[in-house]
Image (cartoon, rainbow, N blue to C red; front, side, top):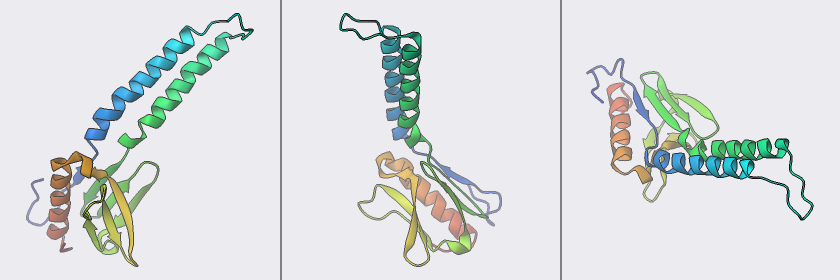
Length: 153
């Protein structure tokens, strides 16, 4: 991040990296296995009767499972002068900087978090310990942005 002196126009965006490299091949494998199983789904001598709808359903189940496997790719953190938007697996929350008491990455934690009033916090699944140096860089950029807009970290 190359932040202007006044912090204007600066946006910090973070997404998990290593998780992406892991879940994409797994999701593809699940979809391929279910598709192949659906194609080769045949009637058997045990009395089981499979139809085309069963084959299509098998492929559909594979697509749904692949979609669920891809959910860990969804998290994103986007911060700018207006505040911080945290999109985790399901929910998205936007916090203005006056609402945010700090951003931290506690020792031993799996991911960073936005510290809020009353000892509450919002996990930032986009900045994960699993990502190593990428997570360190994202936290530095986020803290630098907070300093530039006047919310000292």
